[in-house]
Image (cartoon, rainbow, N blue to C red; front, side, top):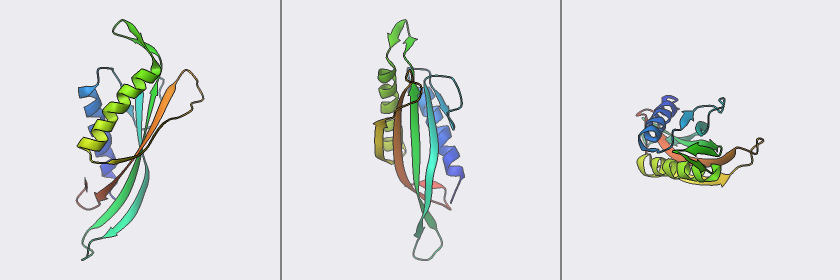
Length: 137
């Protein structure tokens, strides 16, 4: 298990969103702020996959959960609906995780939220990683 890989993914996603999003968005590790829109990324599973033939390298199956939280807000002088903002951010995350990061999306759905003024989408991705080399494949 290589716990530094989560930090690398978090930093890369944060940089990607800052560079490519037209909407100012905060990327967090926990949903502990009152800032919207926000993207929260968590590693929810990390299971040993096995070793190579000579037991010199181990591999892990890793699942990441990404939650997008948005509220209807004014952007560039016009009111943007929370669902439209969330779907725009969903597209950016999908591009990053699937094309730049080569992870497989296994779940993507709107998620009920206690605060009904917040629109939320939950996405889950799985990937395999080399524990010793610290890279995904």
